[in-house]
Image (tube, one colour):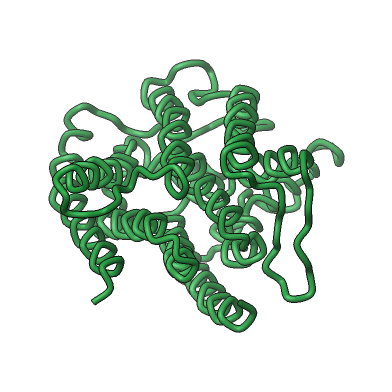
Length: 346
């Protein structure tokens, strides 16, 4: 059997077992430390009365569940380094060409998500979370670092949208601002979608599954191994998070896992595929932009009862389970269709 496949499936099993065995104790620790999420009463503009009414029962559910995913993934990175040192594998998951940037993204953006969660738990400041302005400054800085790494270290200055009728686009120095725009524009998409039990988790699982396949097909075996580790860490998280949720993931959904997917899309030249596979995340973001714009320009008149759109569906008397399962189906169909499209156009 292919040694790369052996490594991928080995990390698949190990990551799931680490997450599966550690999660129950971690939930108990969160409950003991009273690390519960406060449900927001303030919106970006005005009050969030409808949202609070729908989700008041979820107040004080433990948060900071990111440790199940990122903890499992970073533990496996350390294990891979040890295995390489003793000659059991040729390459660890810490690799400059394939995984440095991805791991750097997961770690540095996790720091921002951790601070945001901590502020929510402790009720720090009036908003009880990091201000949008501070997040934007942080993301601008990090996206510049990522763009510089692509351009200077990986000699990347072209973008291919993976569509048969579009050629390679040579951008030279324009690559850096375009790269930054893509990352910043997409940064909060998963955070907007992470409002119902299981919704964002499964959609992320579908999307990382697509990139597990794409990275393997492009011979990026270490990046593929990282993708499969994230996938099965997500499975371990979701196993213990059947409604009602035992704990929440926290802001790391949007800031680390989604930003990492966009980096993978740029690295594999599959931006168009991620736009379609992650279409629900993008539409959720657009619903928030439309709602905020309407409030500002139309004297507080709203387009949706609540934004993002999945909460609008709840407010229209769809049950939480109905919203989640139907959006899952859409996400699954998009993933399957675009894997087929990728194979046809490669």
